[in-house]
Length: 325
Image (cartoon, rainbow, N blue to C red):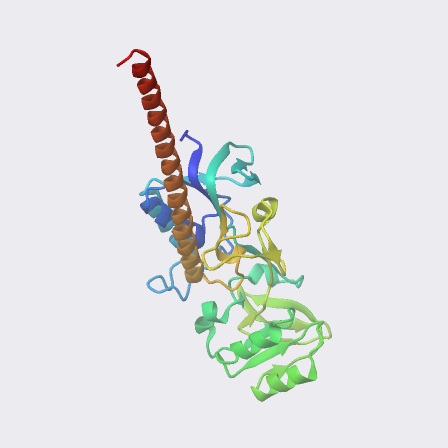
C-alpha cells in the first residue's frame, strides 16, 4: 500500500468511529480516521450513562480515544470529506484523495432547534433533550417541556419521573384530547399559548415567557430536536435509506458492499455508549470481510502459481520427448 492507501477509512471520530478504529487497529489493519471536529454533544459539559465514564466530558472522552487509537498506528486526519466514490476514493476538502478497501461512516447527526429566543444559547446547559443523559442533575426541580416536536408529549411523561413539578408548553402545537388526559393523569400541567422566549438571569434559566404575557418559572426545560443525519457520504455512495435514515444490518452493513455505518448517522436513538458498541460491531464485520477478501486473493495467487508450475512442467516434458530422453 502507498502512503494514502488504507484497509479502512473511517469518516467521523466520535465514539462510534474511534471505537471502530480501535478494534481495527488492534487487528493490525491500516486505518485512517477523518474528522471535521464538530461533535454533536460539544455543548454538553458532561457525558452520562456510560459505565466507568459517567460524568466525563465529551471532549475528554474523544481526547483519550484519539490517543488510544494512535497507539495502534491509526492515522488521524483533521478535515472534511468532500466526496466519496465507489471503489473507494475519499476526497478531502482542500486535501488529498485517500484510497480505501472499505469505508465506515460515523458522522453522526445534527439537531435542528426551534426558532425561539434563548433556545440555542441554553442548549446543552439547562435546555435539555435526553432525560437519561441529563435528568438526574435536575431532579426535583421545576421542569418544563416544549411541545415543538410530535414526540413532545411522550418526552413530558418521561420527564415526570424526575420531578413532581412539570409544565408542558404546547407552544403552537395542538394537543389532542387523549394526550391532555395522559398528561393530566400524571399531574403534568399544560400551559397553553405561544412561547415568546426563554428567560435567562445570571447565565441561568429563569423561566418560560409567553407571548400573551407572564413567565412560568422553570429551572430547566426539555425539548425534542429535529434530528437530521449527516449522511451526505452515504447518499453519495448510493446507500439505501428508509424514512430518511440509512438502512443497516446489526453489524452496520449498508446496501452498498464495502460500506458500513455506525452511531447516530444510522440510529438517532443511540447514546454514546450505544454508538461505541455499534462501532465495535462494524469493525468486526469489516475485518471479517477483509479476511475473506485476503483469503480469496491468496487462493487466487496460489492457483495461478500452481497453474504456471504445471505449464512449465508440461513444457519441460515436451522438450525431453523431443530430444528422445
